[in-house]
Length: 295
Image 1 (cartoon, rainbow, N blue to C red):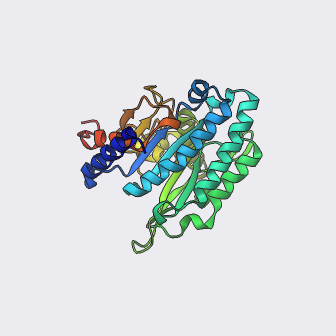
Image 2: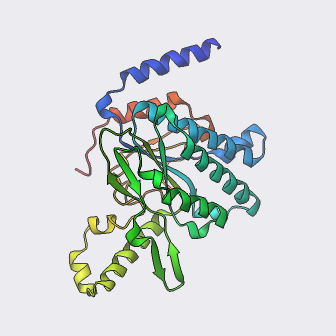
Image 3: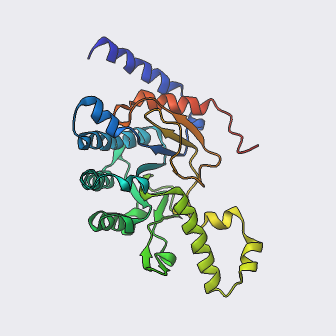
């Protein structure tokens, strides 16, 4: 190990030790950005950048487990990303599928990982959509957790004018505190923040229609909470901190509703180059802020 690496290791340990335990975020959202630029700078195919980014995701979940962060949401593929070339998308879909399998089987620090997809699987290739459905339906997803997520059986299928569409969502179920805690990883694949809100309102109106309630009744009772209960992430806490890599300073539609009171941290490092010390710096910055929740 070179002197530079030794210095960074010591610096990282010092930063970690100084983090106040009561200021660790309970839910972190990450816009994993910069894979393609990383590959371009390295002079390698785009797929190599996505592979490096996938490996970083696995490392990142390890870091979260070590620090006791219970919930992570990863922005892996937006609806806008679906406009990329067919060749890149085919490679990316395979990489995402393999990454999901790796996460589902991993136990960072001895803790199970529960993978919960959010988004629109009908936009994805059937092979990847099937993997997402299997993760959402896996009965193991409610085992070994003090707070677990399980599929919301009451609205697994949404009937629209164009047919029945299954939307992958999750909700919380309370588990015994004596059971081993898990790291809950939401993967946003085929996800669009605007569409999530549109779908939530549609579901709310569909429920009201089934109950025989008028539009006047619905509008009179409409609250932020009544919309929140139909979001893809319903039942989960909103993110405390959202990190975006690659130097871009925008959300690109990520958790638009849920991030109303989140803190944001923008990092220059491209996602494959994102280091543990960069993560610790983000947590230190978060710990030093005074959250106002709009006040």
